[in-house]
Image (cartoon, rainbow, N blue to C red; front, side):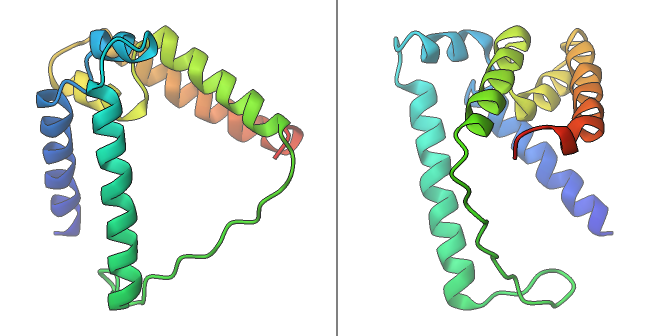
Length: 139
C-alpha cells in the first residue's frame, strides 16, 4: 500500500514538472544563457519550500511512516575543493548532453519522449560505474 502512495507522489511530481515547464530543454537552455527567470524561480521556490519543510519537521519532531523519529544528521564537511569541481563538471556535462537532470528524465519518459529511455539507461549505467569507482574518487 505504501508503494502506491509513493507512485502517486511521483505522478504528481511529474505533472508539476511538466506543467511548470521545468522539464523543457528550452527552459533549461534559457536558464544557462541567463535569458529568463523562469527556472531560477522554480529552483528558488523549491529551495525555500525545502528549508521550510525541514524546519517544520524539526520543530514538530515528526515521525516517519514506520513511527521512528526523523533525524537529520549533519554531514561531515571536508575542505577538498576537487570533489565539487569534478563532480559538478561531470554532472553538468551529463545535464548538457541529455538536456535534463535526473528528475525530468522520468517526467519526459512519462510524457512520451521515448528517446529519453536512452538517457535513463545511460544514467543507470553511470550510477553503476560510479559505484565501481567510488573508492578511487575524491570524496
